[in-house]
Picture 1: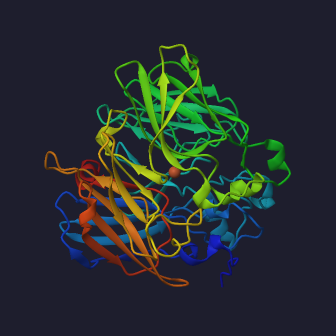
Picture 2: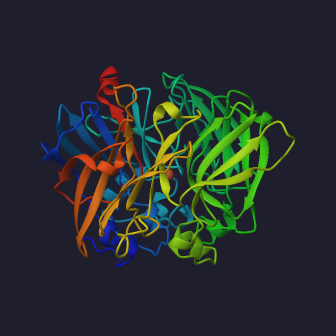
Length: 489
Ligand SMILES: [Fe+2]
C-alpha cells in the first residue's frame, strides 16, 4: 500500500496515480479538424513511491511519465507509461524510494550513490525523428514514439560532454537545427554552461562551454535568427548547502539578473553580458527577435520574485501567488549603443506557459498564447502543480496592439499548457490542444482534451475528448504531426 504524505504536493490534482494504461477509441464530442492528425505528447510527473524524508521540492521530483494522445482520422486514443530512468528502475527493484531531496544527492540512500538521479519529467522534445524526455538536471532519455517504451539515456551518440540538457530547446523553423544548453554542466553548483547545436539530422555539431555570472537556475533560453540569449535570474545554488542536506535553490532578491548574448553560430568568447533588474525570476520565455534596428527584443513571463512557494520558503520569502509581480515583459537589448543593461517594458498580463507557432520561433511575431488567471472567476482556482494554483484563462495576445482574446473556464476547472498545431489553410492560425481538468470533489476530477481554434478562442472548443481516467498535472507537451512521425517510422 502506498501511503503518501497528506500535503498539497500529494493531494487533490497532485494525488499520485502510478498506473500505466491505454485507452483506445475515446469518445469525441464535436468535430476534430483535419489538421489535428498526429500525437500530443505530454510529460506528467507521478511519484511511484512515497518519500522517506521531508522534501519541500518533492513536487518537481515525481517520476517522469510520458503520455500520448493520438489523433488519427477523427479517432483519438490515450496511452501513458513511466520513463524507465535508472532512478525509477532502482526504486522499482527495491520496492521503495531510494533517492532523497529534490536535486540533492547527498540525501540519497548509500546504495544508489552514483546512479543517474534525473526523473526525466519535464518536456517531451521531438527533433530529427527522436523523442526525448528531458529534465534540466540530467541527460534526456529516448522514447519510442509509437510504444512509449524507454530506449535508454541519450547522449548524441556519445558526443555530448555536458552532464545536463535543458528541458527547453529552441528549433529554428527554417534550418531545422536544435539549439540547446545544459547548466551545472560539469556537476552540482557549477556555473559551467554548455551551449550546443544539433543539425537537422540530430547530429551534435557544436558544444561550447562558458561561465555564467553565478550558478543559477537556467530553466529556459531563447534564440533569434542570428543570436542566442542566455538569461540568468538570481535563483542560486550552493554546494555547501547541498552537502549539509539543504535545498538546491534559494532566491536572492538583491542579486542582479543578466542576459548573455552571442552570435548563435559564433564563439562563446563573443558573449556580451547585459544587466537586468535585481531579484526578478522567469521560468518561460515567449520569444525573441531582431527588430531591424540593431536591437534584440526578448519577451518573457517575468515575476518580481521566484514564484515557487518552496523556493520562497527556503529563501525566507513568503509572497502569495497573486502578489509575485508577474507580467509579460519585453527586454530590449541594444547591441550598438554601448549600453550594458536592458530596457524593460511590460507588454502583457501576468501568467505563464507561453506558446508561439513553431514558424515564429526567433522571428518578429504578432500573435502568441499563454495561460493566466480569470479575474472574473467566482471561487478559488483549482489547487495543483508546483505553484499550488492552476490557471483558468487562455489568452491570445495580439502584439500589434489589438486587444487580447480570452477563453475562460467555469469555477473548479483549469487548463494545462496548450500545444499549437499549425493549419494547412493559409491565413488560419491553427489549433490549440489543451487538457482541461474539472474538480468534482475533494479528490475527484474529470479530464478532457479540448481542441480550440487558435485565432478564435471566444467560440470555445470545436471538439472535446473525455479521458475516463484520473490524470496528473502536465508540465510541458509537444505536438508531432502524423507526417513527421511517418517520415521517421
Ligand atoms: Fe518549463
